[in-house]
Image (cartoon, rainbow, N blue to C red; front, side):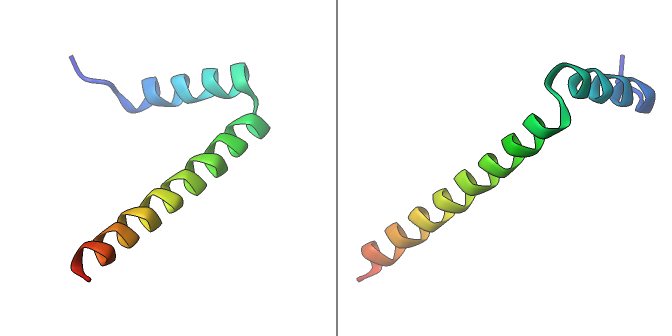
Length: 51
């Protein structure tokens, strides 16, 4: 049993209806900032270990 294209579209539409586009956009922005900070810390940790 696999998930089809239309099933994914329906799930996305339901998520948009429940949360709203503004909240999803802010979630995406927050997630991007968190990943950027995580990558920065990992990079700094690697440079500290090599020194």
